[in-house]
Length: 177
Image 1 (cartoon, rainbow, N blue to C red):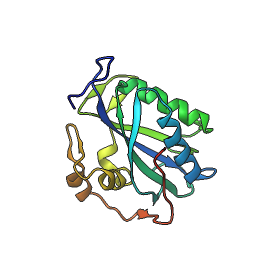
Image 2 (cartoon, rainbow, N blue to C red):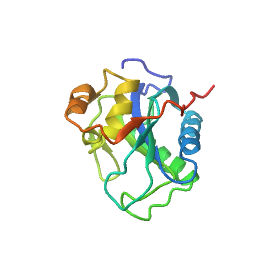
Image 3 (cartoon, rainbow, N blue to C red):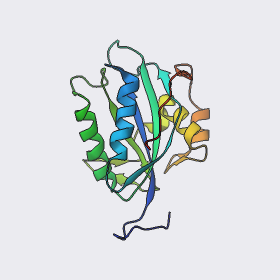
Image 4 (cartoon, one colour):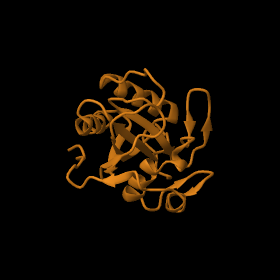
């Protein structure tokens, strides 16, 4: 995008995946959306439908609720990730077990067309292109989305098994006012 803010930082569209399978998962996802909306330099612009998804990897655990959020932001990928981790922590996230159950998980999928490989952050998310639970809601909210270096989400999704990803039309996230 070519627009800029008064700080002269470029405004970019970012996609963030949200997931929860502990506590009240829908409330966790909505709380994360609301918390992100309170972040200076960031505007929540669109929300995907909510999906119930099978856990991937890790121990036996409950189904997840997943969604993708689009934002417009001047924040760097690293700052966006730091803010995401702070929101996870505020909602009780404890990193006890790799791929284990969690109150809230927020992954930065893309920030514009940036490619960042750093010990603190990797954008695009290194496994987003392999995960139907990410690509299905992302495609719903942005059918023209693309993963830099991997290709269009629609093409990546065509290669994946979607059987563990079920729409939950009875559950809805709301854009902040």
